[in-house]
Amino acid sequence: MTIHGTHTLRFLGTGASSGVPSFYCGCKACEEALHNPAARRGCAALLISGTQNTLIDADPDLRMQLSLARVKDIDQVLFTHEHFDHIGGIAEFEFYVRLRSHKPLPIYAGSFTLAAIASQFAFMEETLEPHRVEAWQSLEFDGVRYTALPATHGTQTFGFLIEKLGGEGTAESRRIAYFPDTGPLAPEVLEKLKGVEVLIIDATFNGRNWMPGVHHTIDEAVCLAQELRAKKTFLTHLTMHYDEPITAQELQELLAPHEGAILAANDGLEITL
Ligand SMILES: [Zn+2]
Ligand SMILES: [Zn+2]
Ligand SMILES: [Zn+2]
Image (tube, rainbow, N blue to C red; front, side):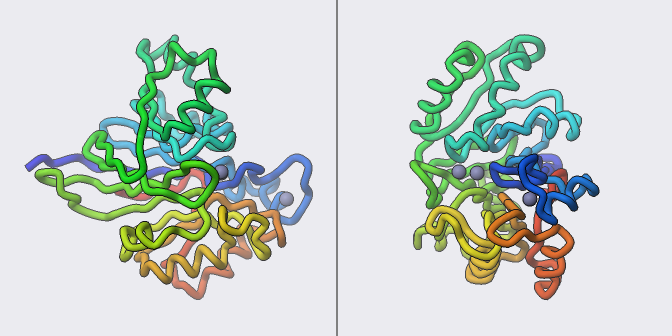
């Protein structure tokens, strides 16, 4: 039986595209974040570290996020979709490849996302090694299986089911679902995620849903967590500004009745796989 060491999952960023604070805003959530670094949110990305480092999405705040995590090497990057808040940091790898790794960085994404990266970051052609991923396809890196599941968000967006592998390719421990950008999930995806140990889910809006069908509100994310009977849920991709600004402190109080089963993620938070 293959024994894989400890893997950690780090929330590099837990904000939506606007981040917290936003320079053009001045709401109470932004004020709180200006005064308290723990309330600041960069764009959403995850880092899974074992003997390798696997990144899910390369957001525009990536340079600072990886520096703070003291990460010097990235072995591969998986992408959920092609929106700028999920691919905008890929340019950080140009000099990483040229100065440190000296080999093209493997990236895994749907064909639509690969095409967007190729056209928007044409100067990266020599530094990236693209691999196409289809929905429901599983990939394995460093003893962890990543299954791309269809999300409801723009063209060909994935969420990932993350499973640490034990002997003979079987999932040995917790199943973690990561869906930073999604609206209501399709029935077959809900079926796959039922009873998942850790759900990390889009909770973009507070109050009114500005983009119903492609994002959740905090309330909708809580309902989904309950429907799936997820043992632990972390809300992510949080704008905190709109429709109704909510501070990190207020969000914590709002979620308190769930007694720790549903929490807001925060930048830098680490959990064990
Ligand atoms: Zn604000
Ligand atoms: Zn998006
Ligand atoms: Zn996003």
